[in-house]
Image (cartoon, rainbow, N blue to C red; front, side):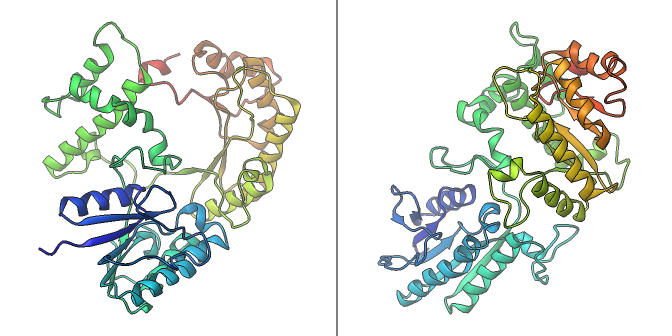
Length: 412
């Protein structure tokens, strides 16, 4: 087998790290390219003229795994520069250098909605700027004249190969488990309580995790690690039986279920951090998400967060919250429910005060209005306090905290 010297753009991402590890395992030499100065060669596709003056000597192939992200796709200038202009400059230089092969890591979103069965030779129907820019980058490669391949990757999961070089912790799939990965909690829970056990014995392993030693308490780091490992056990059982996991847990009841989404920027002008405090922009995002089929939207404008929770919200915080509810309700009408989050910020009195203010907009729920360890007050918010405050929040549910770890914590 011929060993190659491969240039890899995007070597610090989860896809790039996996590709680098696979290439190295096959005996190829990987030269990491990127914005960081300590990489093999420096290249920043966000800058005009990226790729000009690159030393291509000794490079046999190029893998581009640092294309468009959600963030860059929202920028009307930066997105096309990375996907088209800079990419074309890189390929032109590579062609002049006689490069033999290029691989571009694209996205399955180029096909359109990821629903049902998607054939690899299916016609592209990108439904958003992220997908359209990936498709444009593919077309730039095809028109370059360099022998190349495109891989339209679907969702990527797994442990980053190099935690010190991984830079995408802000993404939702990686932010939550970061501490567990870095501290070795997942490996520790598995080695202590699950290694060598039959994956069918889920309840037994849970009892070991919950009760070993003298704890008897739902430690969020331990239970959080076990939650992921339990899902892996059910996945093993489903594969062994050749059945979807839901068939092992009582079977499917509904063919379709409602889904909600948190509100994130959806339009090019939705710049951060202003988006988080702009009710009109959030209303625009709500319109966009309801058009996609979501029947509820979640937002939490009641900040700022403080070490002094639970507290009484300031009148300015209440006014901003009311403005968000008013704008979003006007945008979605009766097509979607409003889900109001607070992250456990308020005292019981403060929660009631905020609830009175937003009640006219009929939010479906009022999430975690008080600190999660104040279970008795949570019950009061949902019962006695409702009657004691001139019917405020009568039609809202006060949701218990997402920080509660086990079923028993919800029995109040």
